[in-house]
Every structure is written in structure tokens, then in C-alpha cells.
Image (tube, rainbow, N blue to C red; front, side, top):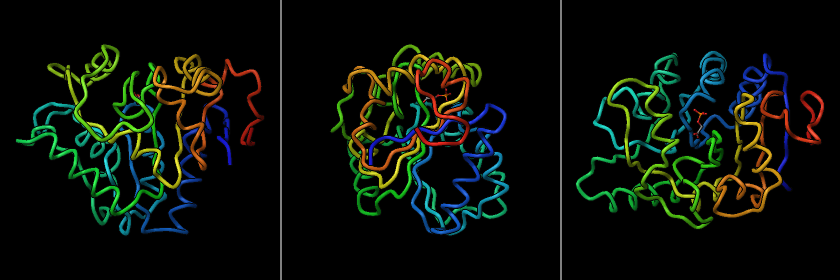
Length: 243
Ligand code: PGA
């Protein structure tokens, strides 16, 4: 199956994504999920917390900033605030990357082998304004492992919105290789500020300049975009239909 695209009106988008996710979770409550943070998934998580029973699910975080434990801009703090704290009962397990580990390379290997041993059923992703997935910044190849990365200036700037002293220069990310090994991938894209990079993602050359393009080679990937993000696509499908 090649990359599929569904577009929803802006005011319906989060509900429709959460509904779809709830359907998946009803069929497979013990799903192993890889979850992103950032602005994009927030409204989806609000609705998901209401609709989905995560108690049998396992969560793997997609990435983490190199900030002190407990820092509000860290991805684990954000996921807690945006999703986990709102659940009636926690998931069976939540796995995180620890950039403060004494041996960061060993921490990356630990995480990657855990992910590979368990296998990801569904990976949700946001789309970086520069085309990154997780912290796989431009320049990342499709076989990039889980690793410590230096962050692109736009990524540092995006982290800074979470308050003072939130300007990490580095982070850890699940590698492109592991992301692409997920059984299913949903790329969540909302807002007109993502319209240009969505065009590049769907129709630009597949390669490291825009790591998100690699999902076009994935057998079961789906782009769930709102109408604003899809605004520059020449052939955006009608509401809720696949294109
Ligand atoms: P955003 O970030 O959801 O905050 O726009 C997406 C990303 O950088 O992966």
C-alpha cells in the first residue's frame, strides 16, 4: 500500500484522528505505541484521553530533549501534561529515553533493542517545519539508528516556547530505521504553517533533506492533515476521504 492521505476540516481534525485511534485501540488494546510531543498532537490527546482505554497499551516516547529531569520542556513532561495525567488509569508501561544517562550511546542501544524486541504497532508522528520526524533532523538517512543528535536551530526555537531555559542543543531520538520498522505510521499535520513542508513531504524527492519523505516508502503509512495544512496540495481529497 502506498502512502495514503486523509484531510479533515480544521475544526473536526483532532476529533476524527482521535476517533480513528480509538477504533484501533478497541481492536488491539495491548498496542505498542510510539508517541510524539509538540503542539500538533495536543488536541488529539485531549480527545484520546476521553475516548481510549490505554491500560493494556505500551507507550514508547519518540524522542527527548537534553534538558534536566523534570524540566517542563522535556518530552516526558509534555506527554504527561498533555495525555498521561488525564487518563483514568495509566498505560501498562511508558518507556522513555534518558539523555542524562552516563553512557548515552549505550542508552540509545538499550532503547532501540527494547523497541525492536517488542515491535511498534502504531507510531504517531508530528511533522517538523524543517521536515524532521522525531529529532531526525534534515541530513538523517532512512537507516539512521536511535542516537544522540544536535538539534536544528528551528527545533531549539520550538522548544523555547515551553518557557525560560528551554533551549536544548541536543536530544535523543528514535532513529528513522526504527520509526520505519513500525507496522503502521500516522503522520499528523495541522495548521497553515505546515502547508509548504507537507507539499515537500508528499511530492519532493525522497531523501535526507526532508526525512519525512521516507514514509512514502513505508507499506502502511497514513497522513492525517487538516484543511489548512493541506492548503497547498494540488489534489487534496474531499473531507475524510482518502487520496
Ligand atoms: P509541532 O512539532 O507539533 O510542535 O509543530 C512537530 C515536530 O517538530 O515534530
